[in-house]
Length: 332
Ligand code: TYM
Image (tube, rainbow, N blue to C red; front, side, top):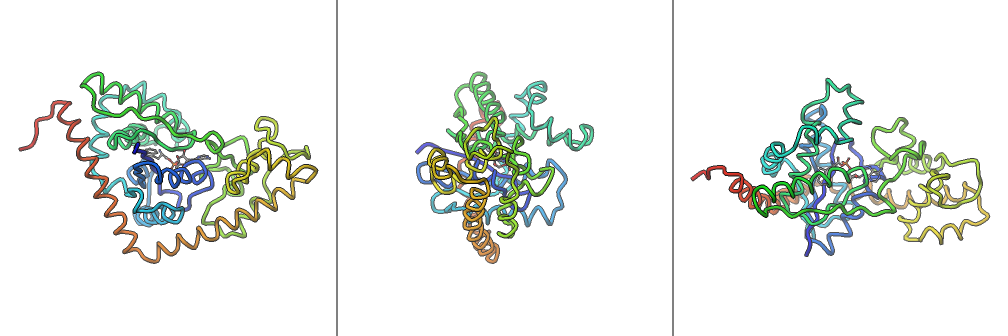
């Protein structure tokens, strides 16, 4: 079985529709066919200031949402990044293999640090992609299921894996991004030219999976479209309508051409009403299942403890090989 690894940040509280359609949905599917490792990346979370209590609560909340979305601890390894100390340890080795200029070219740092003011951004935010490299290489992952915004980090991972293998001999699997074209980038409902993200300029454009279902329906119905009237997929000229068609297509398993045919002669309002209903039917049980996991923290924590144990056994082996290759004296 080929191996997949991916991660999600716990910082926003609720996952948003982009997280789900771009990544988590694929994670659920891949646990059937792959040896799958999925984690809540709390080490990545502290690259920007976090309230400790909130971080702890959000880490549990993220795990609960992953289970509610369909991850099955019998079929995949679900864990919290900080429970596996090898992530930070391998990250150091990777830091020393990365060029300063190379790290400077990571566009997410540019975007995120611009928001905070470059001088205030932490060094951790700067080296964030290198920690992600360590995450992936520790598990010798073949594929990394993510959204489009993570492609550059997977490319960096490939470069560093090849560099290490070239310098010290074959050690790491060179991973490939696993990015589905249809859902690689879900757009903001109010500004369909930018990706949906927790830092959206208006909350109306962001579908949080844990919002009240009524709020979700309202957001869908007030999505920005265009002044044309035809319901047709055209990402360039009709980004709003195309985004709604993408979401409806994935959630109902109906192809876009079939949807276009079904909505021939109909108004945008009809598309929005149907999508609002589909969304409500999706988020209502999701929200309930998440709450059930939160109500039973002991079960949740024991799932995470088992996950960490499985993850550590793989991570420790890779780290030991790496230390040996680098020339560290074994501790006897
Ligand atoms: P994060 O927490 O920002 O996002 C989690 C996943 O959601 C995807 N995503 C989207 N996909 C489509 N459309 C959108 N609008 C959208 N917004 C977010 C992201 O691409 C991501 O797959 N650095 C990572 C976490 C990470 C990781 C890793 C991922 C840490 N280590 C190792 C893979 C492998 C991040 O911040 O994702």
